[in-house]
Length: 368
Image (spheres, rainbow, N blue to C red):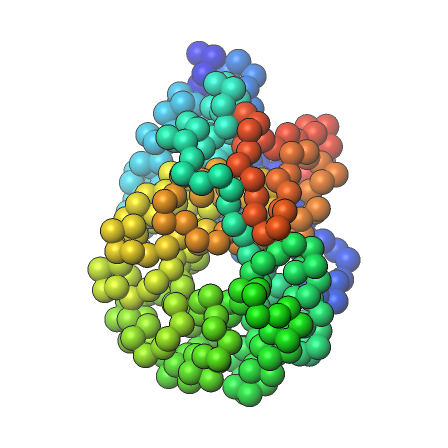
């Protein structure tokens, strides 16, 4: 039948091979879904380094299971990752594979109906989506280098910056020096957030949070893995800054204890790990607890960001969406339609589907 899934094809965009003094982009795994009448949609899977082969294999396994199913029954397909396919014990690759395919199915449906994806889910409650600039670097950087990078992003129009001044071994005063340099460089009106990247114990997280109180942060993120809601609540009750976590948690099931324990102020499920429907479900579950949703988006700034924007537009309790300005042009040679950031926001899109169009000839060399 014309509207049934006839093809699920993964593509691997390699990591940037050129060393960058700040950071070179990781690999991206994209998915093309095609229906019997030739309508195609594109999605993206959340990818951790060194897991390319596993995730590509999982996309193939999931795709085989979906061939022949109605392309419009998106919610029905999403019963599978936890249920029959996941056998109630799925992992990151299962959820990320399904998320990429789900995003592609929404893109295809939007093109079929000539409507933006957010309109297919009830429309928007925002005119635009605010973003923050993530300036993570895996390389050691001085306070002056942090300050220069933050100022560069502010000059480009960003109004909020997230940085990583602490790792497991960083003396507290060294991290404070980084924040001092950045605050001086960007001024008092730019929002700053600090990500611990799950390196701390509760005691160290509290120690650092108390030391950086004067910087009036937007939030403190991921002091440790969010698998212990009571420990997270312990930290939240001991600090003055808002506490954010959740990028490693794929579904409502993993967030439930955090909400029930009032352990967080903000959550950040990843759009390409949870998918559009599940991210919206997590947001709805968070809303009655007065918890804000700040979508995690360490994916491409073309396709992943488009999916995040379409999901975010319908979330009433929306915060800032993640954006990596260093990588915003990484896919510009193979696709068009990337959403620009202007004055810290991305405007409501109008194109059908997700609005990203890929050059299929250029993509062939990335097909796996």
